[in-house]
Length: 149
Image (cartoon, rainbow, N blue to C red; front, side):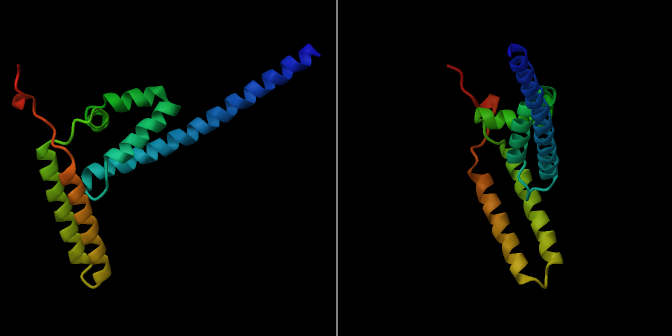
């Protein structure tokens, strides 16, 4: 009887491991898709970058420690996550560049959508909301501006 119990527990453990491996692959895939969208967001200001990178970090932390460490230590992508976690804010230079690129992209889009007024209106609303969000993000403090006691 004990051998049957041991055998069934071993089978359950193996099934749990296989299920976990399968689930980890799906979580990893979702994190990778989120990473791609976040990277596109770096180029296209209308797409948010940080939320997608935070999703990626959570997915990688759950599914692959190796890729999680890579993401956090990445020279470009890691700073988004670290700044968000630490509540450091957004550098003013990045805010200005983001807003300029956002409105250039929207202006170009509006030119191509000249016959579709309702799409133009949606684009303007989205761009306005994104601009307001960016403006309300606390500016990142410069180390040179800090006064020492």
